[in-house]
Length: 228
Length: 252
Image 1: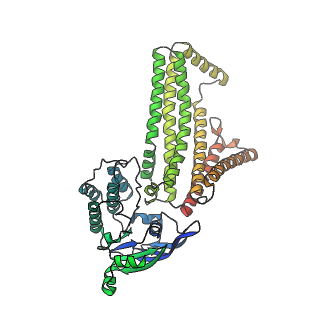
Image 2: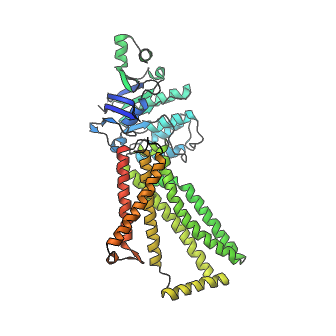
Image 3: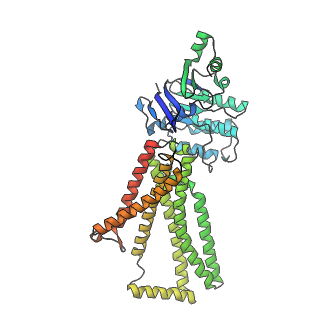
């Protein structure tokens, strides 16, 4: 097991955004974290990556309680752009390689070229779709045990989506796990192994997608429509 | 931690360029004054260099606080808090980058000041005479040449006490983003806390100064060693308190 969320709860001004969420993340799997906007997906992910301090509960990573060193092995991609304004794409790669020893510079450069980006492009100049591709490529060029991608397919065209999915699929291995949060279930149901459904801050259902299909004949999209 | 400092230093590059551009403009003004033998322009340019240097050091300290606040309020906070470094290292890098920035501005303006004053004092004319007279007067009053030890002693104390103020600013900002995050008028409260802590530090200084004879400690150029130690200790205390609060409470 790579990571565990033990009864994680987060309250903002007394209102609980995440309620008592317990989950185990195992290696070799792609997880779909599914739910409508405001269901607590982002808050839960940020607690798992140490950006947000839980009100209650605990995060265990690689068998030990969470501490900042775990950030070496957890690669999080937020849905919003977050790179410094003064950077260009090449500087983003340099930043990651400066801080993460295992950052794969070659993979980063190759993927940037493959998806039609240029290292000279500045942050202020690139479009939403380009930014989405850059964030995914930079995050997945790290050699981490856990990748957490928050809405990686938001606001981008079909071709860019296919390219991003391709990058995700080439990254997952038996030694790591990928969690993808989205409300675009149809986009990811063909390649996720596990589906975690969140609503109103709680996990309301969790399943192995293939087993569920064999057992009840329902796809992840069917379940989503039923549960939400 | 070197990489953290490198990127913090990079964030204030535009400010450094602007400050150096201003300094260059003042030097050009000085040279023009010298070439056309207009002592008013020369005197004004020397004065501007002196005051702009002081303002520059003050400004880069304030800008450091603005950057910390922006780093916590915007999504760019992920850039800092996603890296495998402790909160103390991140805050420490910010503080060190701020100190380096202030030292950089000081050295740039100090060098320009020394060159312009020396050139003027060596030149013919009433301004040169004035500077030479001032030099002689200083020598007669103090019975010595310019005491560079005292000059740097005072500069160092000013730098350390300004770093202390900056660190208290860090503390106030972290309080705004943590324990005061949901408070009404949290920003105003943080500003009040900032001033109260600084006033408190000065009160403690006065208290120590009145209770204990610090003379045996010695000092540098007329500045007591106690003054340096006091502000360094206060800065270290503020740093660890800030780090501890951020470590326990800060969400970005």
